[in-house]
Image (cartoon, rainbow, N blue to C red; front, top):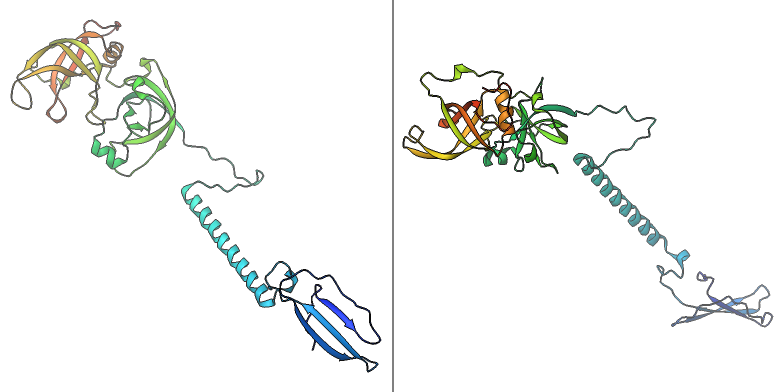
Length: 327
């Protein structure tokens, strides 16, 4: 039985009746092998076949057609396994993207469902400080929230909205009547003073007459009998709410401090600033126009939140911008 020859083997045929050499191209190599086979031809004459050949690596690129069958099967199996692993990685990545909302499935326009209306809303109200304590900010995951919109006009789905931070400087609108366009978000089921979150898309300032955060007239029922009418003079500044629903939004920094003999500590204290709360919408608009200016206010000192005291303003005596019905 003769060995299998490749096209690169060199074959020489020698015999008395066939002295011509027949060969094909042979590549150079380092370790040639030689075997001689003595055969008998049909004419009973001896024929000598001299083979010059060299063994090559079955995995070599020189003989891709000579790869043994088991090796070829192994290559196919490895390729299939690699393809399966890559497909699994792609599938897991896509699933993770869908879970986080990063991937979207694209469908042809002809088969795409009709666009659903978003939940963008327009609310009109007054911008105030958020009033959240550090503990509440941590619990509600609202560490960067500093302002809210509340005292909204018309029907609203919440008592207010905490304004999620963006490039807008909300402090410029503190105390102002504004209209906000945005998307409400419910981040937690915990109690947040009846408020939701708002991702603000647009904010614009309105005329103060479009908002009514206070009463239209002085509510005399909240003034206890025997409380004296007092007058204070100082500079009106913005306050910081102690809680989201406690409207301590204005501070009067007194020109002259006074001795408070009735306070929660039970000891006399020198007071240099007081919380002031306008009794009516008209007085609110007057105070808002008197921000950072010297103003004289008249009213009553009352007990308020957590044994604190505030001054209920019933009249602004020298407003920066005169209000026609201030009293």
